[in-house]
Image (tube, rainbow, N blue to C red; front, side, top):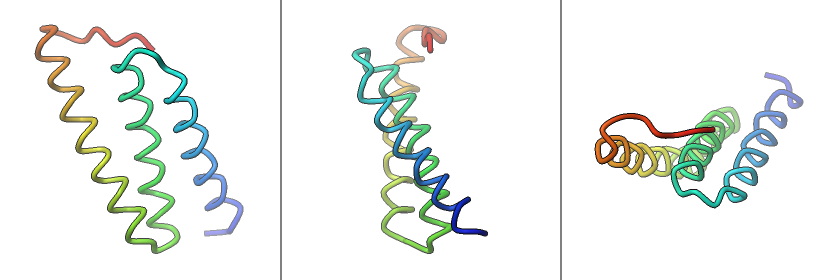
Length: 81
């Protein structure tokens, strides 16, 4: 891959992470941070950076777990993006 593609993925990860922290609602924060973490996994894999990949995977697991709990407690999806 070219450096510009790798760097673009990195910037997308950063921007979605910044967007996530603007959300007051925890559900929206978790959803957007999950998206950010997914991009960090891709970015870390492109850089062969195990710490970035591991951190992204851990964050994804945590956010999916909590989003599933929210989904189950609400008996259906209530997320509005």
